[in-house]
Length: 92
Length: 106
Image 1 (cartoon, one colour):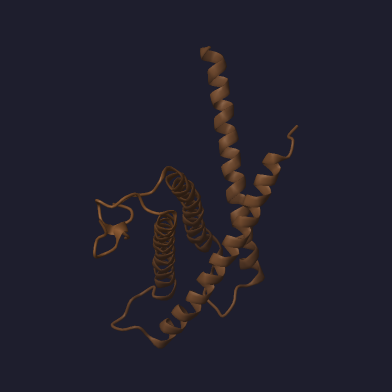
Image 2 (tube, rainbow over the protein chains, first blue to last red):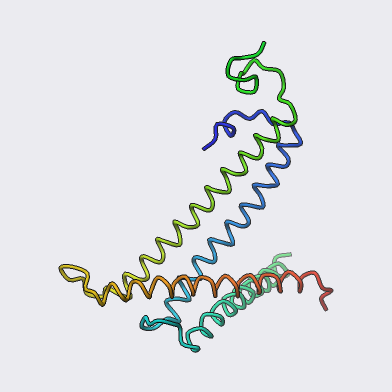
């Protein structure tokens, strides 16, 4: 890596810009990492024997796999929030 | 005092000029971007290798057979295709969620 990182002679504005840049890149890296995980998961769920192209069934399964992953995530978050709200009512 | 190797490299130099700062910032960004791109490619390769190995070489023999090689070749293409389908669907959904969260909810 560049010595620029260990030798920071950036002014405050550039520091700020760099922080912003890092945040964006980190967010993007998180998305990419989740896409890798999801590709692995959905591959196992949807892909049968290997041929020269996906069947329409496999294709649809891959698309549904992503959609339902999001739905499941939303659902779990809602459930946890509901439970926390219920617990909050009890303790307060 | 100007150093032989350029003022910006010397620890005793006066504050860097705006152009030098901008160049340094750009070089930091470039190296971070390429590092992340490398990691991304590496992750894709590793995952593809794992998945295609288990699909195409279920019972490892003393060498790779030609049908296993053919399977690996096709599997590579399929894995990339799956990766692209997942990426496309994921990004579409992410955008939709963002729009929904901005819209006034009930």
